[in-house]
Figure 1 (cartoon, one colour):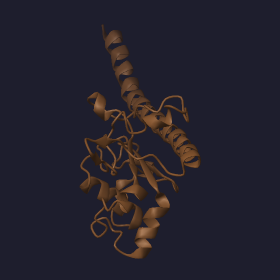
Figure 2 (tube, one colour):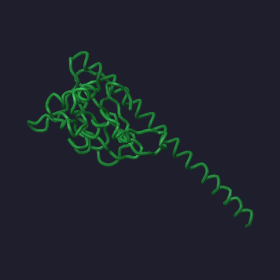
Figure 3 (cartoon, rainbow, N blue to C red):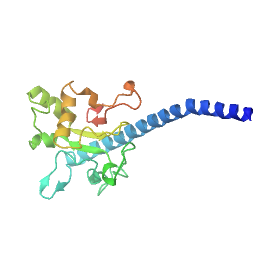
Figure 4 (cartoon, rainbow, N blue to C red):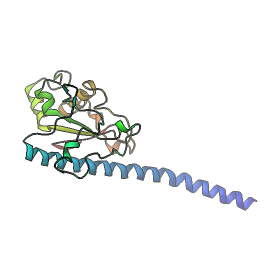
Length: 199
């Protein structure tokens, strides 16, 4: 009986050591997958722009063009696979998203179209000066995953959330918006990519 208790105690100790390491490795694997999927989508966006001289707008809601992006809409980037297949599947599921079908896909916003249409309050978004606006225009578009904390900062409440994302790109006030593994594997922030690269 004592031997059995010792064996159970040893197994419990080994499990206590192994499980956190396994969970952390799982999160790191998901981060790599998300970054790879976002990179593939970015390549498709650039190929689309070469053929069409513009980046995709997001679909309309009724008669209103939603330039800011629809959070996790399956229709947002459908034009990347139909009618021309810039990628085989534009409905890449965000590995960190939870919840209903509407919250499983990457967020997308056409930053240039949003600025051109006047859909961004540039003062609130930190793009009030010509320099900040030009800095924002260099990014052109934004792709976003909720990241390991599974909290969507950018596109959950356009225009407010979107303007926070924009402010992160033009100022250093909200840099915590971006996921950084040096803050911990499961730390706050979204995984974001723009035309200028990964953030």
